[in-house]
Image (tube, rainbow, N blue to C red; front, side, top):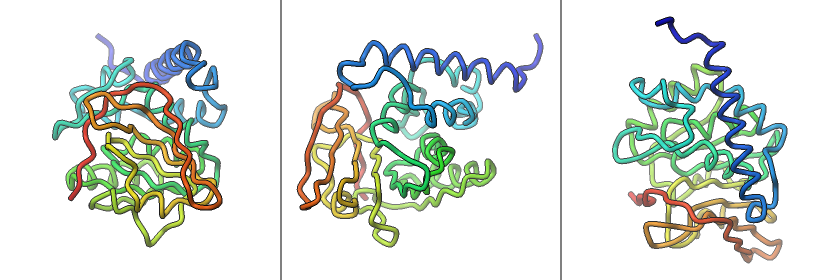
Length: 223
């Protein structure tokens, strides 16, 4: 069998984006959109997702489902990963805090869109691996090991905050570090199934919460 080439991988990414579009269309009533924004589409097409999974799983990195990455964690289904970024309404020049780097895929997509990304990861091995890979790909994402529920006050306030693990309530520090009219996207709930939720911070500092759809994430760890 021939070796997989960059051309093959580009075709797999294109197929993955087509599947993401199908999911957006099917869930358009809940999402409020029927497809990816142009900037996000370009970023998802460019970021080599197969590098953000264990090497043994690279051949199925573009399949429509989550994949294990170690330490009982997963990289999210491509649709869910893209949806979370879409709900953040990330623009070029935005400053974004990510809680839960994993191996860095969503951080890479947001950086590809022109955002300045700060990412906190509680698993030391993930943080180091993600930082090396993101640097190698030319993405200037700042990654540190720590308890993401505390945010990263040195770089606050943020235009947007993305939390990639489930929690019963939005951590107060993350809301405090969010700019007025900024968005926090996270899986919210205390059960195995959470609601993917958009929290928008009003000008007066209060929060407006909108559940989007059921999702299943591992629990947010506190260190």
